[in-house]
Structure formats: C-alpha cells, structure tokens
Image (cartoon, rainbow, N blue to C red; front, side, top):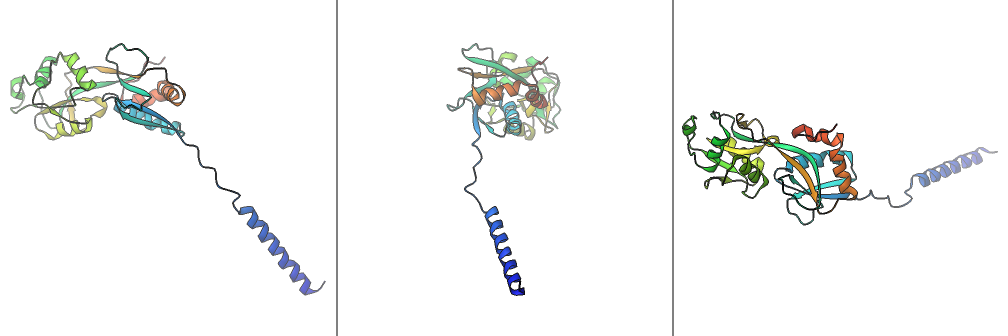
Length: 252
C-alpha cells in the first residue's frame, strides 16, 4: 500500500471517529423538566406562626418535592389551620403539634420591679400608669400589644382576668415590631411568645403566663401531602424541630 493511501485511510478514520463522537454527545431531545412540587397551604395564627415557620423550613429539606406555604389565619385557600387550642370544641379534624410559652417583657436596660399576675394585669389594663406605683423607677408605663382580636390577646385576657387592654395601648402588626418597640421605648411592657424574644428584651421572670397548646385543624381529615406534613410534624424528627424553640409533644 502506498504512503498516500495510508494517509487517506488515517484521515478517513479520523472523520469516522469525529462523526461517531459528535453523534454520541448530541442532544437526543428536550430534557425532562423536574416534577412540580406539591403545595400544602397552611393558615397560621399569631401564636402558631413561629412554630409553623420552623416546621415548614425543615420540611423543605426533608421533602424537597413539597412546598409548605404559610398564609394568614382565615385565608380561603388554606387546607389546614394551625393555631392555639383555646378550648373551643369545634366539629372536624384536630390534632396537637406542640406548645409555645408566653412571657411579659421589658427593655433589656430597664429595671422592672418584681411583678405579680395582678400587677401585670393592672399595667396592661392601664390601671397603673407609672412604674413608681409598683415600686419601680419613676416613669410612664407604655403598653405595646398585638391586635385585640388575636389569639394572644384572648389567652392573656383569660389567664390574667383582664377585661380590656389600656385604651392607650399601642397596637403593632407583628411580634417583631412589638419586640423592637418595647426594646426602644423607655418604660414599655408587652407580651411575647418566648420564641420571639431576644437579648434586646428581658423576660419578667416573676410572672408565669404558662404555655399554650398549638393544634392543627381542618373541616375534614387531611389527605395526601397535607396529611404527610402533619404526620412528619408529629414524628420524632418533626418534634425535634419543634423542641428547638417551642415545647414538644410528650412522645413515649
């Protein structure tokens, strides 16, 4: 075989190999899109919001194929409502998820006197308007609170025998706003869920408002992705998330 024929064969081989490689890497069609995640819509009350947020975030890692959307209480699109167990017997599905504690708080740099439950009620109702009336430093009392229709307001009123908040109480739209307002206002006091506190406020340790049970509710027993989410929330893994900032269920 001549040298020219040998080079022709080698060139032909290169072309064949290149063509085969090009065919191997060429796309064979449109890639299959990832499946659309299932959506679970949960309406959370003011007292349940932090617990639901913690569970929803953790569940995303546990089940990437499911998105838990947290909505305001009363949302028409929600499948499940999660809120405080206020002892109101209602027809339908109910199941416990955990509990959250409530605390009276003042600014971290404020020296509040030791308070009894009755004195706290007097502060919140506006009966006591100056801290010096309770043995504290002279100064006006400023009460910050959430809306009067919230679950927190109902729980505090029931546990302190509080007929009404002070007419001068300043209402704020969120727990974060309440915490900041108390921390930045001299002589301010408010009620926060314990998971919503930080170093900017001090818990009045002499007052024990106790804990509030948090439950899931629905007209009918949830199915599908919603049922799976609640089952996980009550499992050992889910309750470990609850216990990070709230109170877990008593699991044997």
